[in-house]
Length: 161
Image (cartoon, rainbow, N blue to C red; front, side):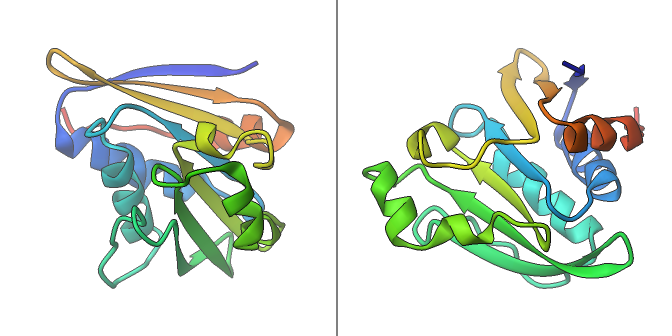
């Protein structure tokens, strides 16, 4: 299992990681984002979406559970779906909403609070954990599939320090 551990000293470094991750993504990837409330999951996703070319407002899907965005990855248009399962009462809600069909080769799925969707949530290619540290955030990225390993191999994180 490939593992990458980073320290993000501030919000700008979190945004840089999101932007750099956007350049490493390919269609068909699933990322699980772990971290407490306020750890930076949505901020990272927002930076990723903007770096992937999305120009509109990126809102947290806390109440809608999922927000789709059309972006260009690997020279093709892809739907990036940002899920936030925090308010989901049971995994069956995930299935009833038809969300499982979005996990395919034509989309990228980023899932906050994936533990709320177990055991029906499709497996991730990358686990990304954010932990608020005394000064900034500590991040761990773990590749769990061939696609995840390839993505992390392409990741060129260059913080503006």
